[in-house]
Image (tube, rainbow, N blue to C red):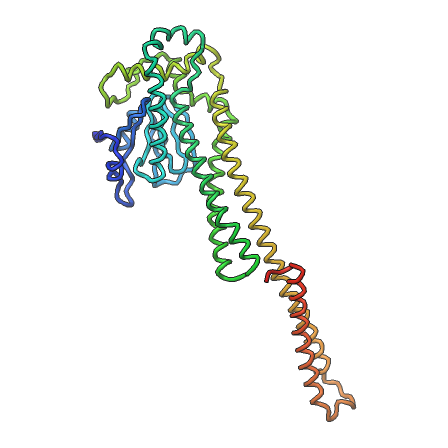
Length: 384
């Protein structure tokens, strides 16, 4: 049985206090309306499912204790968004973000509030004029404002792309000097440092690849992109806001109703046109696909640089081993020749000479080894 959810104002201090104990799944959400007003909700999954009309399997994707790849799902009344730390549910008139006290989620919440508030102010200045000319705007298709769900989706995509790009830049800043230092001086400390950086690069590449693959999959399927047009589906179905069956946690307000109406009118012109037109969303996704693809290319370049460094180090080691093998083979050959048990006259009373030959040969081989390494360093074949 679902428990009643408590509603509290969105305050940074209260957001910090809303963090749960370690090991327990957080029940804290923040709800942002079309005006950017935030409200922290301490509710369970059943209340969220009832509010946005999604299944438990969709909400399970947003569980922080479960490992799910980056996903953007379009449902009848909501968009389920799982992009790294950004776990959100977007509807045609509100956004639900999980774990608002998370240090990586707080900038996303602030950016959403800023953009939605600016948009609401611009709309509020001409509220009366828009109301009187609403029908003319719909007929003429002059309202080029993006639907609410696309504005929220854009903030999430921009945040995750910027986050991954920043992590990539930090990794590049640390990796390239470490690799250069390793090529100049091979030591256990430098090798361990590069090993850790390579592991971090592998994990980051996998995260970036998942986001890129999800965007690419959306761009390749027009039906999946059409599912993300929530305002279009809402207006096309001509269903009133109160008839959706969703739980209403706010009192009825003409102001909220007018904001919701304005947010949905952005898709009305498209509804009267081609319902399969996804050009607006395609352009939005394409822009961030290019950005995340550029981040992946940087990581690919870094991986190639690491592979080249490994090849360079292997060449150095092979040169050392080959030089040592050649010198040791010469020494073994001389020692084997003079150590053969073959009778001959001139070895009588000259045993001391064999010892000196072996000693001189060993010294000569060591000198030859040092000479080969010095020549290789002079030509830049090995590091100093």
